[in-house]
Length: 162
Image 1: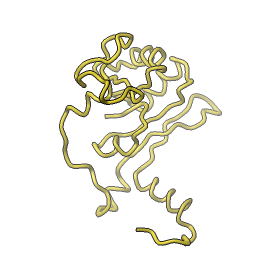
Image 2 (image 1 turned 45 degrees about the horizontal axis):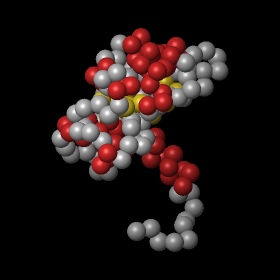
Image 3 (image 1 turned 135 degrees about the vertical axis):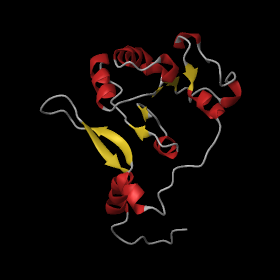
Image 4 (image 1 turned 90 degrees about the vertical axis):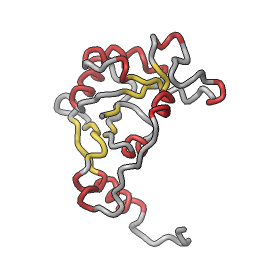
């Protein structure tokens, strides 16, 4: 399953998904291109971004049942049961909290399997599109670990890591 927008990159990876974030200011045409290019199958969308995302999802053949509203501003205590919509303006879409009602399973793990880390696509990030429409660049879990190491661990810390 591929995801369009999310604040929870690790959450997406934990269930075996692939993150594919796009610029929220994109037009429906640009979003449609991104959804098709990244092979998006499900969306997690901020309420304010729903109009363009819904148009693009329709063009990219993403069913309404695979679109979830990221209503993180609604306190959990105030939310209606996760299997229902929280706001009538969402045209029957469910809150992202609905996904929590689907049970739990073990996370995909990479710590003891370097080859899995190298072979597992973690994200499809988009190029700038300078010479045409943006292209989706596949990034593995290992790519992200290497980037983290290069940027944050290139010199010793002056404190102990626990």
